[in-house]
Length: 423
Image (cartoon, rainbow, N blue to C red; front, side):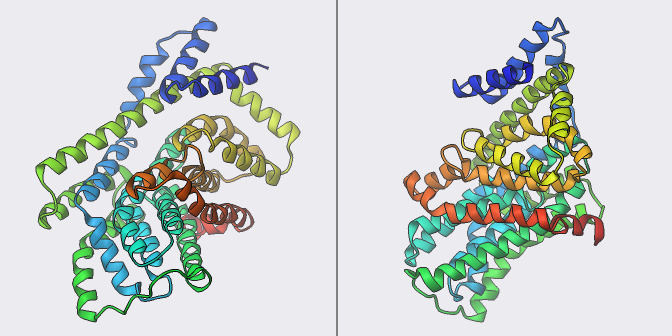
């Protein structure tokens, strides 16, 4: 009964438009006060959120992606990829997805990936006769790869909450991430064959390919350095983020694509996003302490294990709840509200927490392109100067592909677990 009341209060605050950070923190403080517990957990939550070496990776990855965004490297990356595959059936769509995949391996941010590649790809594709809903949906869905292909900010936060290995989480995201890239590309081929409505592009001369590749090479090497240093064990995710940030500065200034004004704007944008994320984390930490003292996760875990004996049913219910929550909650809020409650039940169900983290992130990806609050929908709406309905119309096939990937991941868990544990 207590759990239901707290959940209703939280949903009520969110529906009233109270910012997520203050809804979580305020409700947590109220729960502590009502139970005559020390309110010192509030400043402790604020301090412990910022005093974290692992979480330092978040602002560094945000800084790196914003610097690359302001430096216009998305155009060089897209031009290089499309010079090699643009003449294929649906080639510009393929180039868009591949560019999103490469940039995702640098940024860790869905919004940065969608905005960076969308700025270039949307105009290029629409000028070539691709239908606008398809183009907008493709870029919105491609942007979600930014939180699945490592490095991933949500996976860092999941690792902090659950105290699981962030390196293992990163590596577990590679297989499903590459699978989604492949299926999105196959969909582009299918669109070209059956959807039509685009102008085929001539094969680029080798000299043009080489020239375009040279301009994009530093960005590709940056992705290799960021991921390679983590996978090889030479650097922690935080250290890798610092290295990536330094190299991104070198790249944009060496290419004369950055001004001091753009750098100031990139730092300001990163600071705003970082403060928002950390405030939500602090609020979630206070709320998490409160519900733990109320023994709500333990009670829910007991209720789940007492009433649900099949892991398949548990996963189905979790995915259904996340899908419904995605209609009115943004990705980070879902992560911070649900993971502390669900995590204690994983051991009793025999569910690998690394595998579950990957599945959770894919469901968050679905939330990013689910109306009415899917963040990527609004990013692409702004970048493409489009109506929201156009973006929603184009995104639903990719949403179905993501949900099918979740089903496949359940039946073939090695899609996520092979690289971190068997390779």
